[in-house]
Length: 273
Image (cartoon, rainbow, N blue to C red; front, side):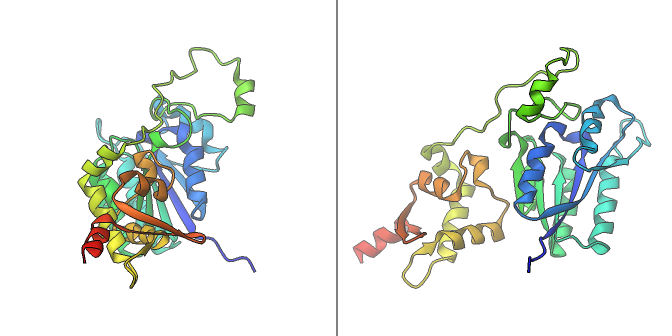
């Protein structure tokens, strides 16, 4: 019997998010569960959201219209928050995906987590730290998929088979690519200078340590997930193991198919003892 997958409600602030990343966002969420609720919020009368209009049907995303009731004010945020609260107490999804770079959603994320739902955030690197840190896990869109293009109105990146058919696109409709946004891998010196990262890793390793003083890597990853919003790709590494090795702060040992580690400071103390 197939176990049911966690249900995810994907809520998109289309005014502050690029349509070009929707495929990789859905791919990330598919690793966790199924995004059976998909909604994008914005004032669809604006030309800047035409990029999103082009992908709504393709990815089965329901557009939610939010008029600008006051000039210069964005009603999208409030509409998204109201729907999130309604879903929390009616459909009761196991997790939420919030796509935005706006820190105004921080209180919402904290409330959703307090009620037992995981929250996966997606936004640009300009996203304020309070929103990033509030999420169960936050991924910078620049770190995902192909080269990012422009802002909310950009057309989404197409798979190779579809790019060939788009050769007739005119220069007027084709977005200009920005510089390659693939994250630079931080070197050992930079990682060691990141006090938050060092503290997070050391605390997780200490908490996961067994009687022999060694910590299973899997348990360390779980400890980190329980403590803070974290993803090694935000530092340029695909896996936690690669990031931990790069810090050069821990001794590592392979025991069969498992990896265990311990703080080098602990190892030195044990040697002196």
